[in-house]
Length: 142
Image (cartoon, rainbow, N blue to C red; front, side):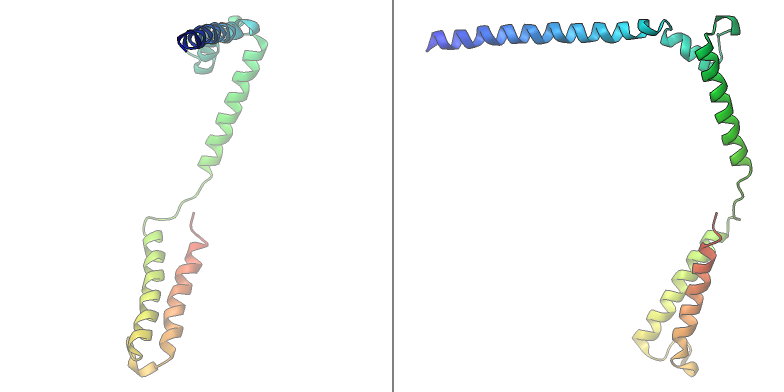
């Protein structure tokens, strides 16, 4: 029994050592992956940040990448400038109208005569009309 336990421990040591060696080899491959392209990540980040890179030291791929980034930035800025927004009172108003219409209809169903006793069943139309105005306002929300 003791011999079997020792054999299991020996096998575990061997497989554990193999995993450690494989992990070390994988990390070395990842570290060497930057060298495959000939450009370090520090240099790429410097080009993207445009902090310490000059045009003479940039490769053609880095120049293309930087130009593409500038185009994307310009396109996003233009789309943001063209965006119109609603005034600050717009959202609270349509939310209030939706809630007011719902409360109007619920109060009428519960009491059968309130909020305006003289118009009777037309209270439903008034409540749904208020909700409809609030819903139509949501279509113009930007």
